[in-house]
Image (cartoon, rainbow, N blue to C red; front, side, top):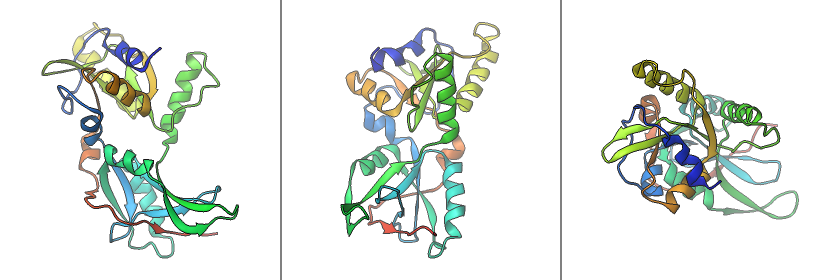
Length: 243
């Protein structure tokens, strides 16, 4: 089943959902430009990087504000990281950063050039939610995406030009949105949604295949307001983890 067909299942009926972030027409750039992503930097805006078992240096980017805040608190107690702070960019820029590889000029223990990378941090609760849904669909060996995207079949937001499929990074937020819509529908909707799990890559593929396919990410008000905007690209600072 194609990415577009899977996502279009969400439009089998059109109860109203919260639609404050929904748009009339989009490209992947406009779709991702409103999704906040948080990263940890020093006071000059240089991202902190940590070592991986493969010998590379990786900086984490967070979709969830609380994850970024927790990692910031942990980072600040590490030697040399007392100036750590959280910056906000958008998903469009974050994915461009993730596509780039920068050499550090050093070699790792395996003798190959050490890379400096930026990666979206997985959210284990949402990956667990995805695993549970896969089990219910008798797909026990299907690996969850690093960043799952959840869709409720039949849930759509009403906006200028027609319905738009809301996309959620959090299943809990999807459930709350469904419950609010079901309450307003007064029995016209099931009490619980049928949830589809997809990935950010599949969503972008669906939009690229058909720019008229209308969807948008649900982003909470707290997440929208969290962090500071990161306006400039800077070199990364390598932080050696404590042994």
